[in-house]
Image (cartoon, rainbow, N blue to C red; front, side, top):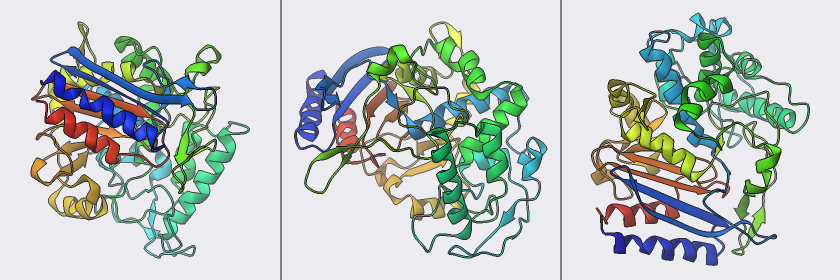
Length: 399
């Protein structure tokens, strides 16, 4: 790689911090299993002028899905879980799921024609979403918003709704479409967390600790941040119209702001906190096809499958419309996977995969180029945004 060209990353990070587009951000890159660069800019706490640093702990939100996927495939390769298996066989409350096609807060649910499969949870084809975005959202999405409100209230208060309780509650909400017939980004990974608990006989966090976090020595990764590490947890900020930043202290998707106690609801879709270095260990494991530091987390063939799958052609067409910002990608196994780089909105190569999070953390794993990129930040509604694309363009033009 052109190391001198990579210095442009610092300029871009500083630019976005200076114009209050983001409070703090860092980027870590490994090539051929060696660190080739680390950059940081801004603050994890603006008022306290605390530098956004390498050991800053962030709420990963949807980047948690990549870990949930690895956990599910650990059970799949052990013969304990099956992609074609019906969800109801593991969680019986999903035996009588319904579908409601009406838009608005009134609906007439009808029985689903086929059961939700484990593969539907991994590919976001289950029919469950993330709540109503407007009055014209489907009936099921309006009911999901009510569940989200309950989860947010609980995590900030009594903290009593468990992962299994969540699964029980969402099973009563009508789907937005017949399972396996469409794509809808939503709570599928959280249901998968409940599945992993049932199949493994262990609490979700316990399974992750034993099979992923401890073997990878991800010592700062968990569903909460203990008291002795709270000073390293970044604040969350959101942009205001006048190019200012405002601290955000609310709960979202049942994930608390303080993260200061073990949550009853261990969210497989959004609940994990981590650092750039910890997530790099996870990314390197995937880049090395399941192996890390002389240990094996997944089998090589498993990672090959995870990172090369594609949506069925008819569903891909719907994904392309709904997720237009991810043109050139498919979405399978809780991962975006580059299938046609010529259509992507940033430089990449075929087979590059990973995911991002609501607050802007970003994981990119590129096995052909032996490249792993991890970005972290805590910006409301960031996801994969223009800062992400600019940094990635610098990286890929350096190859």
